[in-house]
Amino acid sequence: MKSRACLIAFALTAGLSGPALAQGDAAEGEKSFNKCKACHQAGPDARNGAGPALKVVIGQPIASAEDFRYSPAFVAKKEEGFVWTEEELDQYLTNPRAYIPGNRMAFPGLRDDEERANVIAYLATLN
Image (cartoon, rainbow, N blue to C red):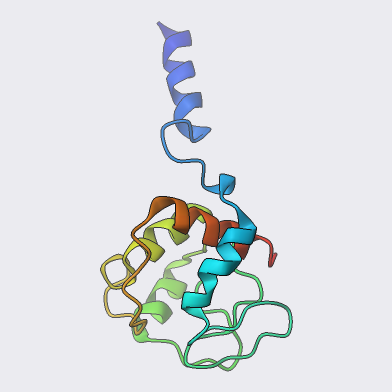
């Protein structure tokens, strides 16, 4: 019985119960990122615009772009210790306003699971 419980715990912590986000196609994600370019620049030389520059995303604390004025909702999340993981990005990009109420991002989200996984894979290349 104990070994079955360990196997279940391992499966859950290994992420076997959810989607494999890192399996997205970064090249396709870069194309989908075009939807984001009205507000965000991405890459090492990115600059803030209507949205913060996305130089490194995954593993970074929320609200960490220099010289960008974040919403109080993002500042509060930063104070809580929120860090962008692939899983957090997946939830956020599905419906930004629902996932972090009070944030200023007007984008309605990416409803397609594959497209979101691709964008997250692209963002992972920035690290």
